[in-house]
Length: 328
Image (cartoon, rainbow, N blue to C red):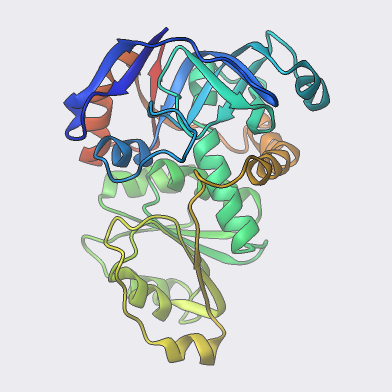
């Protein structure tokens, strides 16, 4: 099969089209003929040698795919209501940049009605991440307020729409007026351009001094202290990436006096059982939002798989809004 491999750690140019043996589905797994592969920030980190795949996972990059089931564990498929030929999208721990990919049955979801495989490939990583962190971990509820750092990212555009669908008020930070307009168009109530306005002051102004209930943070570093200062009482800060650095200092007394929670998680190394539980929750709730078009995939650009290096270069430029997808 054709695949994109990391020939050496480094710049986007180290991504190389190659031939690899076809993988074989084991117990509890399916083999998917991939038509589209989503691109995510962890793929970039893996290419740089910063974020290695979990033990036992493919060395090929790629955490989400869409395509059709070729073969697999018949019993597991039957229990999941799947069969050979079904169009699915799946979250995987690696190996997504390839014409064939093995995925746990529990991490496969049917392609939502009305969506193309390209659109479906843009869903798993962001949907699983947003659901498990914003809703399961931080417990965002209808009537609460969510601040998303990086609203125009793949995670951001999903979080905006999920939170709106759940009845929350949504604030985002972005780096340009163009990205602000895009986020407002997706349903954000307020967009803060962090290049021209301090987000702490903006949050306090927009919430009449109360602060926000939940913050979804992909920056960390010196953002953490500032985020603590703009949480409401009983507020929750969820850190899912450390693009601004892993070291942070903040006033711990604020946590005590205002009952704040700081938490975080990564998804890739979590168990199949954990991810399968998220998949079931997504199918019962978020998939209905998507099929009703209350939530829409946001695909910024599609690249032929052989142009994975160009796709990574665009991702690192931070000029995109939403997701980048490889087509096979």
